[in-house]
Image 1: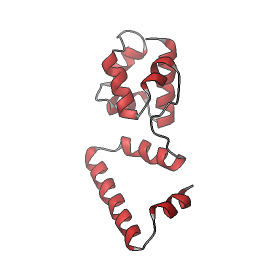
Image 2: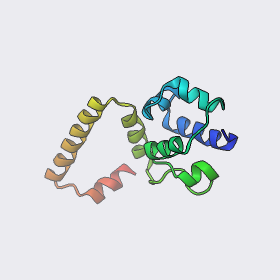
Image 3: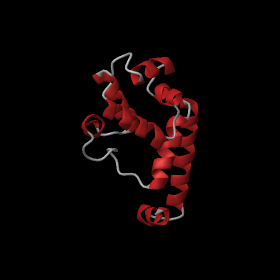
Image 4: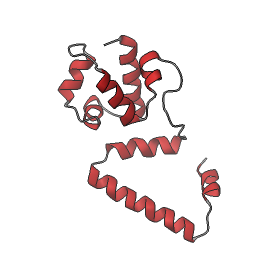
Length: 123
C-alpha cells in the first residue's frame, strides 16, 4: 500500500479513537485481513478505499491524493465525538441511542427551543 495513504488511514483511526481491530470491524473485516493490508501483504482495493470513505465520511480525494479536507462533513468538536462514539456501538445500541436522541429533540421542540439557539449553545 502507498505509504502516504497508509499514513492518512492511520490518521483516520487516531481521530476516530479506534484500534486496528475496531477500525476493521466497522468496515466488516477481520483484524487479520486489515493487518495484512496495512503490512502490504494484501492490496488495498478500490472497494476498500470506497468503504473507508463511506464508513467514516472521508473525502476520497483526501485519502488518495492528500488534497482537500479530510471529512466530507464539517462537524464541530462535539459532533465529531458523538459520531465517533456512535460508530463504535452495536446495531441494537445504535437504535437505542437514536431513540434517546429523537426523544431529546422532541422535548426541545416542546420547550420551544429553536434549532438555531440550540446550535449556539453547543459552540
